[in-house]
Length: 195
Image 1 (cartoon, rainbow, N blue to C red):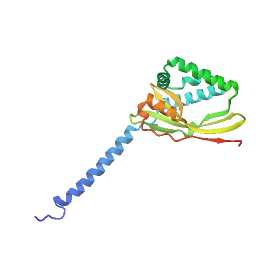
Image 2 (image 1 turned 30 degrees about the vertical axis):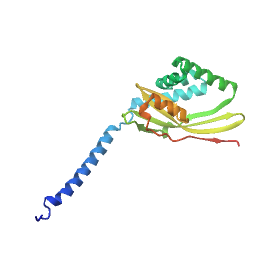
Image 3 (image 1 turned 60 degrees about the vertical axis):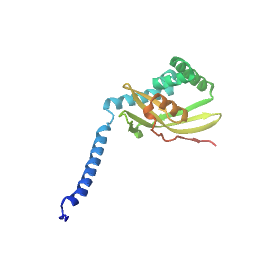
Image 4 (image 1 turned 90 degrees about the vertical axis):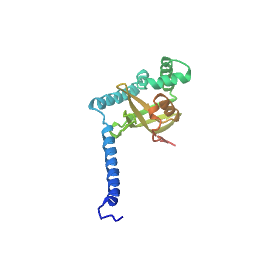
């Protein structure tokens, strides 16, 4: 059988290529549609949450600091400890207060760089933000600078903050929010300022 130039046998690869291109375009357009930016209201609420936490650190308002931890994370910690979420919060406040008042750790500065925050999205189309965070603190006469990321996650319309500088914190986060199972977080760093 003889096939003319441009006949059915030649058109088949062209159709396959066109179908592949159209499928790719569909995936790209669909992905763009699924990635939603934060609304102005969400941005304002996040900025307020960060500002309030920053003020709580400066003022030593330990109760407010714990209010920025997601309730699902508190519940996961309580399950592991065999206690209630209220007891977990009370213990967190007590330990933080004792550590800072004894002078074991002295926080010299603490701050978020919301201007360099990265907006991300989970596979369930829920937004989250990674905020560069820096703390300078003193322990036993030595000064340290710690750089890490703070995870800001939106749960039931409210922003919560979690520092992602510890493998246990990540494990508890994934227990409380399984949708973070495949999400990798860059590691933080700590440097000694007066060796």
